[in-house]
Length: 490
Image (cartoon, rainbow, N blue to C red; front, side, top):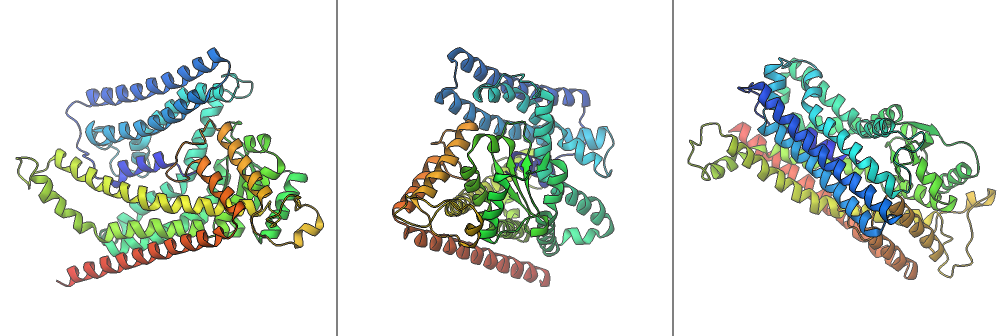
C-alpha cells in the first residue's frame, strides 16, 4: 500500500542535494525534460497496448501475458523513478524552477514544481497501463462509467493521500521551522527527535487524510458487515469504521490505517467485495486485524525512524567517501564535481537500498506471514480434525475466542490469496521483496495446518528478529549519539 515510487521521488527531489543554479539555456533544459517524459509515456503506452492486443488476439489473458505485463509494470515504475532522478540531478530542473522561474524561497509552490515531472510521468504511465489492465481483467478498455480520466483521477488520489501527511509536515518543517529556528535544522540530534515526532504524527493523522482523499463509503449494514463486526468482537479489535474503497473495480485489495482506534479504518476495495466470498472477505479482514494485533505499524515506525536516526547522527561518516571518490578522478578534491556528487549519492543510496532490501524485506515478509496466520485463525474452528467445520456466525460465536488454525480455515484464506492474485494479474509464483510470493505464503500455511505446533516456532523466530533488530538499532543510535557529543566536546 505504501507508494514506494513516490517516496523515492520525494527523496531524490528533497533528500539529496541537487544543483540549483540556473541553466545556461533554460529552453534546451526544458526540452530535454519534456523528451524524457515523452519517452517514459511511449514505453508505458507500448506495454499497455501490446498487452491488450495479445489478450484480444487469444481471447483470454494467458499466464505468460499476465507475467509479462506484471513485470513490465514494475520495470516502468523503476524507469519512472530513474528518469526523474536524471531530470533532477542532470537536466538542471531545480535550476529552472528555483533560478530561471524565480520560485526559490516560496512556500509549497517550489516543492510542487520540483516534483511535478514525476507526477506527470506517473499519470502518463498509468494511462498507458490502463489498457493492459482492462484487457487482463476481461473488461473493455472504455467500459461504461470507467473512463480513462476517472481511472487516472482515482489512482492519483490513492497515491497522494498516503504521502500527503508526510509532505505537509515536511513543508511546515522546512519552510516554517527552518526560518524561525535555523540552528535547530543543523543539529543532528534535534533532527533525530524531529523524525520521531513527525513519524508519530504521520501515523496518527494519516487515516484522516486518507478518509478525505480516497473515495470511500461506509460498508452498508447487512450479512457481510455483521460477520466482520463479529470477527472484530472475537478479536478484541476496535476501529472507527469499515469502509468500502472505491477503486473503479481496478484493485482487489484491503488495508488498515491508524494506530489509534478512534482514527482507525479498515478499507475493503469494491473489487475485493465483488470477487470474494463472505468467508474469504472475513479471512482478509482478519489479515488486516493481524497487523494491528501484532503491532506491525508501531514497529515499522520504530524501524524507519531508527534507521533514519542512525543515518542522520552518523552523517559525518559519509564525508570520508569524498576522499575515496576524489581518487577516481584527476580533478581537484576541493573543487565542486557533479561526477563526485553523483557517485557519492549512488554509493549511499545503494548501501541504504541493500540494507532495506535485505533487513526490511525479511522483516516485512515475516510480518505478512504473521498476519496471514491471524487471517486463517478468524475463520478456523481450531480443530486439527476439521472438517466438519464450525462457521463462526450467529450470536453464540461472539463468545468463542480466536483459536489455532484448522485445514478449512487455511483453505479459505489460501483461496482468498489466489483470487486476489488472479484478479490483480499477479502470478502466484512471482516473488515480492515485501510480501513474498503467493505460492510460498500458501505453502507455509498448509504446513501449519498439518503441523500446528510449527506456529510456536515461527512466532518465536519473528519475536527474536524483532528484539535483535530493535536492540541493534538502539545500540547504533547510542553509539552515534555518543560519537556526536564527543565530537562536539572536542
